[in-house]
Length: 55
Image (tube, rainbow, N blue to C red; front, side, top):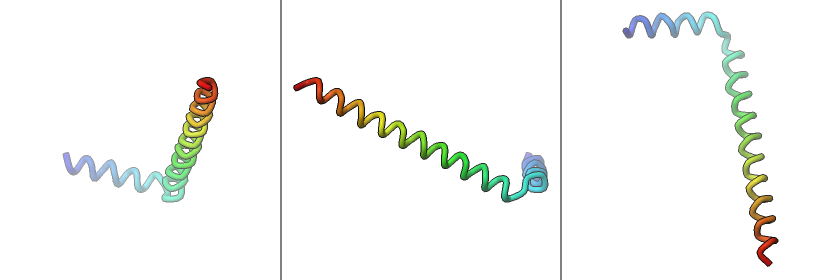
């Protein structure tokens, strides 16, 4: 089983360049950050609007 894992890892290393892998990681990071900021801003707007209706 270990040999199969090493074989697959070696194939991935040969097929993918390091720039593609790093680019994919950064793209995922950017989209995760954008989504997190949108959720936080939406939550703040929701809480402010909910608090304004109490008074």
